[in-house]
Every structure is written in structure tokens, then in C-alpha cells.
Image 1 (cartoon, rainbow, N blue to C red):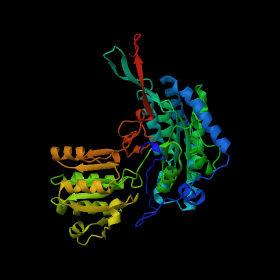
Image 2: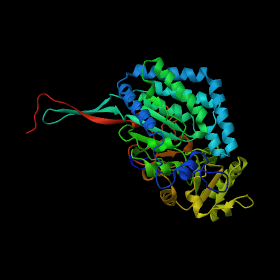
Image 3: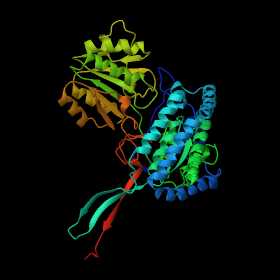
Length: 461
């Protein structure tokens, strides 16, 4: 993600094995109904601006709320999730039924689905965020200048965050929790495919805020499900401080072209695992299977497996057996195919090296060296997540230093590039550019710093 005006990046979706396609849903609406030339205007313009203005007023109060009050809201919301689980799952079931009828892809349906275990995981994230240190008001780097001035920086909220997201109802909880704890208000514009789930969750947040004497408009949604409100939301310059989109390529392209508000970039997740010479074959195979299979429809799933030529004859047959048993389609370069006689694999094309499948499809390439593996990642990667499996500390450290992605792992699955797994409690997104943040965005990334100066009557000559 990169903060810039009109600046957003791309993430492809997959409608099924063997081809890349944009997920059905609100992305289709953006490209077909609003058009590629610009935003439709005029529909309920005042209402969307009123929603944004109410969020701006709420943000001023949330920015000054103490940690105990904000934590009480998070705690109350966690209780609502537990106490209203049946109602939430019922709302989600209606979304799932409608999504299946609309022909949403398997990857999008997986992102849409809530289960008791997933709701429990969301609740654990709330608990973790509740217990994290509050960054707001923290003073950093105080130094005495030669003229006697004491200069430092204080962390402050960003203001009003506009979240535009598809499918994932967990975003309505994770994003709001992080925004509130960091002293921000948030407007949650979820995709129509999750309308019932998102409405239930936004209403729950507003109940929790009211219960603790904080303005309910600190968490809000556009005034109706009308998708043209998204266009108006992107024009609320002066009321909304930052737009964070999460979803498929068409959604993100639309936001890129049309936002008058700074946008955080999130590129697609073309993630790699590189198996180095001398690696443990058993450990490397387990990591590769987990990185691809554990949840293939998410952005930190492995899409390309790179294997050093020295270990490929031993590693590839073992890994291929496990991957194919898990239902993975392998698309291999010539060297990899030659090491897998009789194994049902396909020939990789140039397009496969930069593909984000979000499915049980894996590109496989044999490389002659660590340098060639890093060059492949530099050429085809999206700056998201890369992992090296190795027993050589020096080579591991070189990989960490030279591979410029938002998260680089040694001897671990790419699936760990996740805000909860990395200790942030939850995440509002994973930044794949270096401004204003890099990697999963948590509380600190939802604040900025202002200079504070203490003097004793100094004047500038």
C-alpha cells in the first residue's frame, strides 16, 4: 500500500482453475455501471457528505477518548459477538446463499463465509487489540537542541478512515477495532455480497459505542446500499482523510482512478517460497504445502515455488506428491517437469510467473542459484511475502537483506504475514509499498506524528 492521491494498486482474482479472472461482485459494478471514465455523480450526494461530516465530528471526540473507554468499547463488542453468534451466522448464511446464486468464485465465497471458529478468531483479535498499548499521545524522540528547545514527536490519529472492501465481513470488525483504538473514526463500505453480515456488525459497533458514551458515528456506513455512494465517498475531500480499499483488481483500479482523497496501496500477493540447496526436504515440503494449501484464496498464499537445482531431484518428487494429494495443480518449467516423470503437471507459461491464482494452482521453477531465485522474485514478485527454506544462516541473512518485500521469512510459511500472527492483534490491510507503511498495518500505522516543542522563552534570531 502506498499513500498518494489517487494512488492504489492491483490485486487479481481467480474465478476458477486454469484462468485468471476478476471476482464477481461489486467489482463488476464499478467497471460496467460507473464506467471506466469517471464517477457518476449526484445520487444522494448530500447524504454521503452528511455521513462523512458526522464521522468527522465523531473523530474529534474519539481522538480525545482515553484508553480505558476505547478498550471498554472493544470489550463490549467482543461480548456482542459471543452473545449474538446465531444472529450473525444467520445473516452471513443469507449472504452466502445469495453469493452462490450469483455465481461468486470459490475464493470469494471462502472470504465471505463466517463460521463459529472464524468468529472466535475475530473475537480473539479484538481481545488482542484491547490489550495492546495505545499509541495515541505517545511522545517519541525527545531531544534538547543547542538553543535549549526540547523537541520531540507525539503520535496522533489520522482522522476519518474510509474502508472500501469486498466480501470479507471480518474487515468490519478488524478495521473498526484498529481505527477506534488508534483514535480514528471509520466509514465501512462493504461489498453488496456481504450486505447482511456487514449491516449486523456495523449496528453492533454502534451499540457498543453508545453503551460507553461515545458517538456512534465513529463507526458508520454509507446511508444506503446504493453502490454509487462509493463514488461520492471518494469525493468527500476534507471530511475523509484516507481511503483504504481491500478487494479485487477492478475495485482497486476504480478507487485509484477516481479518489480525490489519499489512498493506501495494496498490490496483489504474488508470494514465493524458495527452497535452497541443503535445506531439510521434510521441512521444506511441509512449508510449501502449508503456504499453498492452508487457505489458497488469500493474498499471503504461495503462488510460485522456486527450487535450487542441487536439491530439486530429491525435493520435487516428495513435495509434488504431497501437493497433488492436496488437490494442487502444478505448472512447471522444463527443468521441473523433467524431474517429475509420470506426474500430472502442466507446462508453465510466462504469464504464470506473475499470476496471483487465489486457487489450488502453483507455478514451479528450478533455479541454478540463490541469485537467480532473488532475481526471479525481483522481476515477478509484488512486494508482498517471500520465504527461504535453508540451513545456511549466511544465505538466509542475504535473502532477508536483498529481497525487498513487505515480509521476508526464514524457514516459515508465507501464511504468517498476517497482522494477528505478527502481534498486531488484527490488521487493516497489508501494505506492499513503502509509504506510509510496509507490511500489515496495525495501530501505529493508523497514526501519524506531529512535532512538539518545549521552550523557555526562546526567540529566533
